[in-house]
Length: 350
Length: 282
Image 1 (spheres, each protein chain N blue to C red):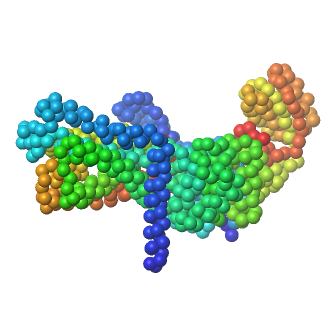
Image 2 (image 1 turned 90 degrees about the vertical axis):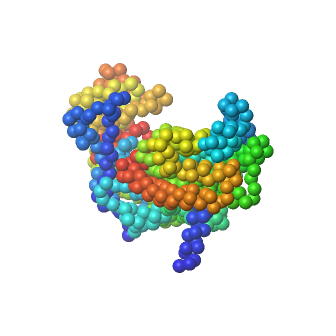
Image 3 (image 1 turned 60 degrees about the vertical axis):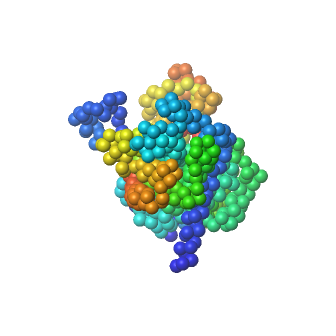
């Protein structure tokens, strides 16, 4: 039994090109007309995904991969160009109200609440939009505030809350009408490790203890690896693989991964190392936030790791790259992701 | 069946109430608004008084009476200003409300909730009406005390009816504006343009007869024109309510058309922007 099933879900966006301040006064040139016709971003490209009831399903991809568009289409905020999705047995094109009533949504982070209202006022307001009777809503709001450990601050305005506390209220809002399905788009984005852990634990509990189906869109590899029963890897609007994290890692199980932590690698270092470590399958540079003390990482996947260590260190030293660590390890979900998509995610948080 | 309808009615009324309460709480969150409410209605009269003094040497003008039917220029303009304030609150309050939700980041949540968005808009409109009416009550009190406008019990009910009809028509127009703001975003400029159309072509500060004939045709499609003619006839010219049946009927027709078009346009534009993916852009 599937809670979410998409059939060839496709969404394209037209790119707008600016034609200068007085561009609207002049006719489009032939080239501009041709460009306008082809200037389309494919955000979702025939996406077919089936998510079982009670499953914690991850949608993993870098920024701009199509995760948010996918969540917005499922939640009826956007109308797909082609294909459809069945949510809790209802078609997102035909039965929008039933789909909306079946979903709890966390999208867009802390800015999606009314900061001038208290936590209680926010939740009571959104409860009314889900047609929950007033008395029932009061009980539910108190229950959720207790669950989020925010009962003692229920009557404070959200402008006085921390980012993590506001995000907890956003999660509480998604649970107001006790929906069977939760769509969570980057629920831990911008949170410190403590709040991230709390939110992740709550997501896990909702799935395991209450049997909710959860779609978790994230670009945090560890989040997907730790939490999800299955993960879909999405890149450029296409789902390139769907499987359990361990099985995805198994795609490159036989190979070892050399990871070098460093400061100051130039963008052409990938090409340089590729020419040196010739037996490596993939060489990729993941930029760190060096100014904040987070080193960049170079990953060399495949080939003879021991041999590659000497070659890489030697090459990096010649390029005046400051090396902070060298590790040879078994492949992670990130390595599987890189292998499958050729793309890389942004730096993981702790 | 009856139970389901009653349940739905209760739930929808609760949505309107929650929206109204939410907006009133926003208003209360900024205490400076009370300064505006208490002081500005009094200050607001000063330009009219000075203008009357400069043009006709006082509050009355026999020349003005030839066109307007009343020599009381200041009372004429003040009533114009009071009713025009509903135009401002409707256009900026309701017309821009969806755009404000997009700015706050809450629009996606309103759109993804299973309720009919019309009830949210009605709640927004009602909260605007309450704040406008409080403001108007202060202005009317000043009018009665200082400018010789008499309000009898017999006039209150028809004037209230006319104001309600005016507000409904304006909400229809504001809904169209809200719809356009989903697509074209810059709602403030659209509201400003509409506000000026109302201000120039409706008899806010001068009688309709002062306008050239082509402008009178524009005036004839604006609800404010009929509301002003009717309210002034009742309050300044002391006409009987039967004398303004025509204006009331036209206002009613404008309301039906504007509200129907408003909701139709809003739903159409919502779907269009959901397809284009621009609905929550700002």
